[in-house]
Amino acid sequence: MSERIVFFLSDQTGVTAETLGHSLLTQFDGQNFRQVTLPFIDSIDKAEEAATRINETAPDGGPRPIVFSTLVQDELRAIVRAADGLYLDIFDVFLEPLEDELQQKSTHTAGRAHGMSDIESYMKRIEATNFALANDDGGVTRNYEMADVILIGVSRSGKTPTCLYLALQYGVYAANFPLTDEEFDSGTLPDILVRQQTKLFGLTIAPTRLQQIRKERRALGHYSSMQQVRYELREAERIFKKYNIPNVDTTEFSIEEIASRILSSTGVERRVRP
Amino acid sequence: MSERIVFFLSDQTGVTAETLGHSLLTQFDGQNFRQVTLPFIDSIDKAEEAATRINETAPDGGPRPIVFSTLVQDELRAIVRAADGLYLDIFDVFLEPLEDELQQKSTHTAGRAHGMSDIESYMKRIEATNFALANDDGGVTRNYEMADVILIGVSRSGKTPTCLYLALQYGVYAANFPLTDEEFDSGTLPDILVRQQTKLFGLTIAPTRLQQIRKERRALGHYSSMQQVRYELREAERIFKKYNIPNVDTTEFSIEEIASRILSSTGVERRVRP
Image (cartoon, rainbow over all chains, first blue to last red; front, side):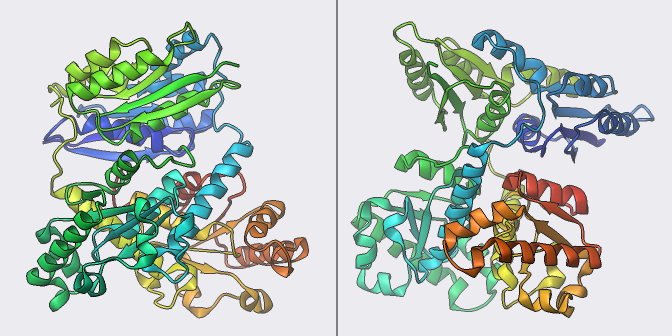
C-alpha cells in the first residue's frame, strides 16, 4: 500500500495536533501512515516553509498528505490551508461555537504568555517528580504521609514509569514499593504501608508478559523463570485481596491508561492540568 | 464571574479531549472554568450517567457546561450530545472528511485492541525511562554512547524532568550531567562528555527564577544566593559558547515545550509516537 504522509502542525509543541491526529488515525486499519511533526510555526516565513513541504510531498500524483493543525493565527492558518493537503484544524472548527457560547471573542494569540499559574504548575510537577524519584522502589526517604497514592506490585509490573507519569502529567505525589520475598513469606505488608492503607494501589500483570519484560533485563535464571513469575504474581494478588487493595492488570494498557485508571479508581485529584 | 463547568469525555483516558480543550480554552481570557474529566465511557450506562451529570450542572439557569468529547461510538455520542451542554466532539467533525480522503470507512471502535506495536512502544518507553534514571545527574553508569541526547546545565535548571519526559513521551534516550565547580573552575567539560559532543544540549534559566526554585529546596545559604546563582549560570553559558553547544532558556517554558524544542533543534528522532 502506498505511503500516506501525515503532518502535525503547531505554533507550539505539536502535542495537541499529535494526540488529536493519533486518535483519529487509529480508526483506519491497514493504512501506511508516515508521521511528521512541524512545531513552532509562529511566523509567516515558517508557515510558508510548511506549505512548501506539504506541496512537495506528493509531486507525482501520489495521494496528498493529511495535515492536523493547531495554528491559532488566522493568517498562518490561511497559508497552510492553501497547500495541497487535507487540512484539519481545531481552531477552524471549534473556535466559533466557543465564541458564540461564551459571548466573547477569542484572543487568537499563539504561544500565550506564561503567567504565574504556569510557573506554579511547573513547580508542582517538578516537586511531584522529585517526590516520585525519592520514593521509588521503597526508597530510603519513605515520605508516605505526603503521598497521594502508593503503588505496590512485583518487580517490573510498571510501578516506576507509572509514578513518574503521574508526577509529570498530573503533579500527583506517587510513591512505590516493590513486593518481594519478605512480603510473600509472611503474607503481610510492612507496618509503614499498613498505616497508609487507604493510599495503596496494586499493579498486576499477566505471567507471560512479565516474563517477557524480565527477560529483557536478565535473560536467564530464577528472576525470569515462569515458575518464579507465577509464584510472585499469585502471592501479590493474595496480598491485594487480604488488605482489600484496589488493583489493575497492566498487561493490555499503556502508561497513560494505567495512570488514568488509577486516578479514576482512587478519586485522587490531579494537582495540575495539562 | 460565574463559574463555567467544562467536561472532558472519553471512551479512553481523556488525554486527547483534555489537550484539545485546553488549547481552545486558553484562547479565552478571564473566564472562570472548572474542569472535570470523565474517562472510560464505554457503555450506554456510562454515557447516560455522563449525560445526567451534564444536565445537573446548570439546573437553575446558570450557563450550560462545555463538553469536549472523544467518543468514537455513534450511539454513545448521540446520548451525550442530547444533554444540555455545548457539545464538541472530534469524531463528529473530522471523521467524515478523513473517510472521504482515505476512501475507507473508519472502524468506529473504542479502546482499540492493543497489538504488538503497542507492546513494543510500551517496552521502548520503559527502557528509555530506565536509561534516564540510570544516567540521571551524572549517574554512575554513564552509558553515554547509547544516549540520543545528553542535557547539561546547573543544578535545578530542569534537566531531570525533561529527561524523564523525553523518555516517557517519546522513548528518547536522554542522559543528564550537572555542571558544577569542577567544570566552572577549569572552564572545560570532562572527557566523557567531550567524546559525545554532538549529543550535548544545554539548559539555562533566568537567575531570579533559578533562585526561586532553589529556595524551595534550601531556603538559606550559598546554594540559593543570587551571587552564586548568577556565577553558575554565567560560567555554564561560557561553556556552552566554548563548545558550541545548542541550548535553550527554560524560564518561560513548560516541560513539554522544553522537550519539544530539544527534539526540534537537535533533530533527534522520537522512538515512539503517542
